[in-house]
Amino acid sequence: MPVSESGAKERIAYLGPDGSYSSLAAERLCPQAQGVPCGSFFAAVALLRRGEVSGAVLPVENTLQGAVTQNLDLLYASSDLYAVREYVLPIEHRLIVREGETLAGIRRVFSHRQAILQCGKFLSECLPGAALIETQSTAESLSHLERAGDAGIVGAHMHAAGYAFLGGNIADEPKNFTHFLLVRKGRDALPRHSACVYFAATCPHEPGALVKALQILAVYDLNMTKIESRPIKNSPGEYCFFIEFKGDIADADVQAVVKRLSEYTKNFKLLGCY
Image (cartoon, rainbow, N blue to C red; front, side, top):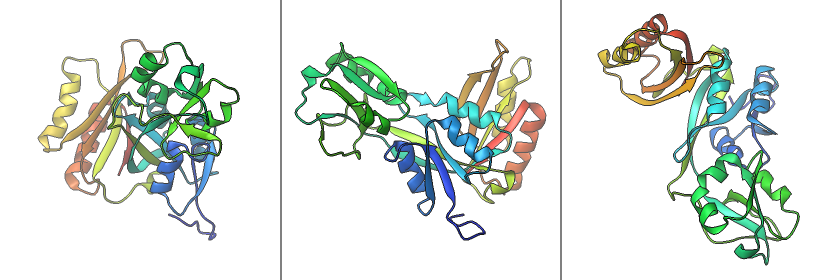
């Protein structure tokens, strides 16, 4: 939905500023939309829930660090929000400094928490004495490089006058990808057809409960492609499972599976299909 009924461009929220990985994913998912950079994922979701934007782009998984748990929790806690499209973005982290700076002179490294974690090996081996300071996004780290000895971890696409990259990709693994979801408000935003279905649920307290839930997929010959577990807040020992499987939401068997899962599990929520 690139244009609203009034003729104006739709607005898509993401973790900013412009140049962040989330902004790149938003451009790929909604190339005709007006981007709305936000200071946090929570702020992006809040804009969507209030109807001030028509969508929000959230990273939910990285191949190095696994699930982005904050965003799984946001999606699960918002009963009227659904993922409707996905995009997998290649990630390449670079160390950026003021021109003329050397590796030996770096005292502080700024970046988003995920980027710092994904570059842990390089940081521990090459900058063991540097202070690691978290920012809201990788792109934002540029605004913190105020003095000699400062560095930031940013995407390879980030370029700015007066700054230079030191070396190439510093991620722990060269093949690094982040899975983004486009989230919209209202069940009517779900596509008619899909390649994947994503849901979350807790299981009854009985022997083999998770196996019984997964057997529902097996009976209909549906392939599970992802499973994550998250502890339930204020309920020690209980876990919510986030599960993705291959399937067309329009298919009668897939609809039957969703119905059976919702009846067997507790706190079932269809997170989306795409």
